[in-house]
Image 1 (tube, rainbow, N blue to C red):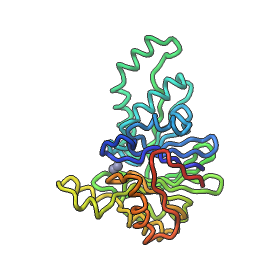
Image 2: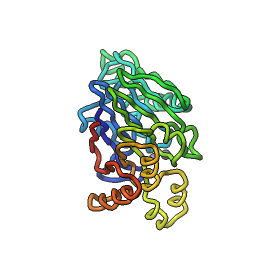
Image 3: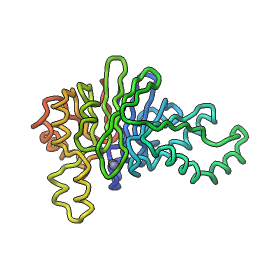
Image 4: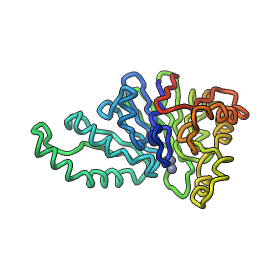
Length: 273
Ligand SMILES: [Zn+2]
Ligand SMILES: [Zn+2]
């Protein structure tokens, strides 16, 4: 599998980092996890696109993780001309969010159907709401879910994808918890959204301090990776976003607690397992 960090950014706007999303390519099966700002551009950079997706997996309904889902839905619709249903999986609440997205797009959907004869109906989207512990397959990729902890955001879930003897855990925003341990156990790569606790603690303002409560720090992610025997730890959604010359410092902090490879990078960094 190729794990492409299509968006390594966070809610904080960044000229060089798209919002949170990760693309998994398992042979011809392409699966997107979350759909943050700029995701369709980055998918193009990764040699993919919404029309090629076997499914979209959503970890939670925070806007930074879903704000470009409308672009995924519209681009899928136009590129497939209704011949393929876009499959979206996410926690309870995902169906309502998608329904509202399509409602917001109604004028555009009407313009395009009026203008283009091949289009006779709107986007074909099917949403499956998941409970922790649910398991399913997309192509020959097996997917399991577990509950994560990102309170007060509820419910939140993470995913483990397995293909051809390899495994990847993509857990979204969460503090360390049993669900993450379960998903990342022995994984070839464990992808964790992280912040630098030591830096964020110095930032002014109550809102900056609030985010410490519900995210993993780099050290906690490394401790989780070590505890569950993950082979590689990939950091994403870094807050605050590091410049490339700061990457070694981030990796060194993790390496104090985890012996495996620690991966940090720009958008489109690809991990092959
Ligand atoms: Zn979040
Ligand atoms: Zn987030």
